[in-house]
Structure formats: structure tokens, C-alpha cells
Amino acid sequence: MQNCIFVLDANKQPLSSTHPARARKLLKQGKAAVFRTYPFTIILRKTVGTPGNEPYRIKLDPGAKVTGIALVNERTGTVVWAAELSHRGDIIRQKLSFRRVVRRNRRNRKTRYRPARFNNRKRPLGWLTPSLQHRVETTMTWVKRLRKYCPITDISMELVRFDMQKLQNPEISGVEYQQGVLFGYELREYLLTKWRHQCAYCGAKEVPLEIEHIHPKSKGGSDRVSNLAIACHKCNQKKAASAVEQFLKKRPEVLKRLLAQAKAPLKDAAAVNSTRWALFNRLKETGLTIETGTGGLTKYNRTLQGLPKTHWLDAACVGKSTPMLKISTTQPLLITCKGRGGRQKAALNKYGYPIRHNPLKPIKGWQTGDIAKHKVHGIGRITPRSRGSFVLTKPDKTQKSVKPIDLKPVFRRDGYAYKWG
Ligand SMILES: [Zn+2]
Image (cartoon, helix red, strand yellow):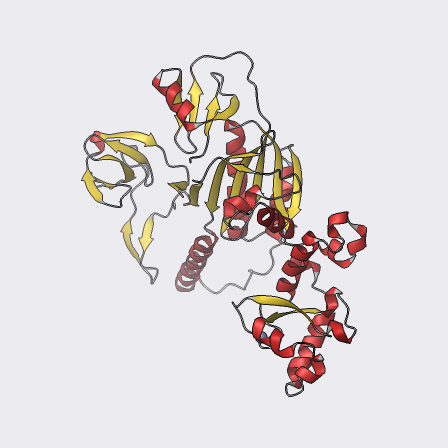
């Protein structure tokens, strides 16, 4: 099953998305034309009365490496379109450090001594590093882009991993929190973060971890968060109902650290993700109504509906408004941030020594990443070369040397690479 196809009316206003089969029919009958390849959008040739727009909600699960995006029809509860946006924060960081080193070397070689001035600049409030800012910007790009092709009325986003306030005073919140299932999910997320995803007793990582009472319940220990720790199955079994002082008798330093860590509540800073807040503030500017959810709630919704853990399904499960989902797609569009290339005139080797001059872009009207159709070899990705013959990379990764005159553009690169999951 594929993502639904976006439909624009003759005035480029978004209509309800449609099934691929129906889009194919419209294209065949000549009633519509392809407007855009990624995301696949068709445009109707004639205006058709008043459009019966469905209410769509865009749902976001922002992550460090991958952001899940899902479009849900609010009326029917159908996931009509899904995507996974892979960010390039690491590449940005690497490139900036390389540039910094090259600049530093160049200035050491070519300039007289000047006093250090690196530390007298101010950063605006809410400043994010370029690699983090990029996450906000690329996500915003996709929200804005999808709004052009689909009549979106609402946004849901996962803002925090767990709800600190509700954890500390479970009684102030709704019924489902009072020792309910949802409470368990929030609690577990909180404890995993607090104990850094490792066993509090032996430090084991990447093993199944369990919630454990530091002062055992049978000896009057409470269920409060400050009395809970995370332990691996082995330690949990071994400790069983013995008192913590007894269990760690031979390791007093571990006991001391554990008791200190148990008492200290997780600082708000550790639970709040600055990038997500920055994204939230930018989403508010769109003027759409925004609903926020916690990671615990997402997991609760996903488990309740028996869905596997993927970025796009997590996105579809964000927020309280999540209906019983009907999944009409199993193929999310895999989007990878590629950037738009550099403006460097001289390419450098790893020592920062210029080795060649980069040609001016575009070359004969083409740029790296453009998708074109060759009259013999079919569709592929173009790598233009200033010597005259281009490289055409086909979907199966085979490469052909082609002449630019035999190419017809299919999709001009827009800073992203696309694939179907
Ligand atoms: Zn352990």
C-alpha cells in the first residue's frame, strides 16, 4: 500500500488527497497532470465546484537523527501519508569543524598576530548550534510544503519525553494517570533517563531493564519515584526482597552513589529538549492549532493499537487526539536531507591544500541530484561534469556516462533525496 496522492485544483489550492488508483485514472483520462514528483502531487485541469475538504492533521515525532511525519484524516482516522525525514546534523558539524581548522591554519600562515576575539560575541537568546537549527528548519520546510498540497488544519507534535509535573504530583492529573497504564509509560521513560539507561547496581547497558524498588516493598518501601531504580533482570532477581544496604554490603561506594542519585530528582533541563521547543515555537507561527504530547503517551497509544515501532508510526500516535488508526499506507517516503552543496571555489585535500577548482553551478543547466530521464537508459540521478559527459546513476546504483542533450528533467533537486521505505 502506498501513500495517498495529493491533489491540487486548477488554482493550485489543495484538495483532499486521493488513492493512487484514482490519481492514475485521472492522469490517464487527461483530467489531471503531474504537478510534482516528490511528494507526488497532481493538478486538475478544470476547477470542480466547491471542494469537499477533509480535515487533516499533521503529526510530528521530532528525533535527533530521524523525524517521523504522518498525515491523518481526522474524520476517518486514516493515516493517508507518511514520511521519515533523516537529518544531517552530524555532517554539518563535521563540515563546520573542517572549515574552522582550515581557516585557523590559513590565518596562522598569513596574518600577523592579533589578540583573541573569539569570546567577545553575543549569541541571541534561544540560539541553537547550526546542526540543531537545521533540524528545526528542515522540519518546518516539510510542514510548510505539505500545507501547500494538503488542506491541513491541525498539528500534533511530541514535545517532551515525559511529563515532569504529572510524575511528581500524580493526583493533579486526569483519571488515566492515577496509577493507570499511562502513568507506567511516563514513569518508565523518566526512570530510564534518570538512571541513564543502565542498571543502577552493576552498570549493565543495552540489556532489558526493569523497574526496581530500592527499599523493598515488603519492608515498607514506597512506590514513590525517589524509591525506584532501574536494574537488569539478574540484579533484580539477586536483590529480590533484601534491603539495599544488605545487597550492596561489599560495594559501599556503589551504595553511596545510588542513594544520592535516587534522591536527586532529574533536573528539568534533562527532560526538556531545546530543539523541540524551538520547533514548537516555530510551528506556532503557522497559525494552526497545535496539540503537544509526551513520549510516554505516544508509546501508550502505539502499544494500545498494536503497532510496531517505526518513526512514522510513532508520529501517527502522538497526542491525545489519536483515534483508532486505519493505516492506508505501508510505504513511508524516506526523505534524506542533502543540503544544497557548497560555494567553495577551491576543493581542498585533507591538509587544507587546494587541489582543484570547482566549476560554477549549474553546469549546462544541471546540478548534482537532479533527476532526469535518458532516452535509452531511463530515469536516474544526474552528476554533471564540466568535461561534457554526465554520470547517470540508476535506481539500482549502476552508472552510465550520458550526454546532457539526451536528458529530460524529471525533478529538480530541492535539497532532499527520496526513496520509498
Ligand atoms: Zn545489573
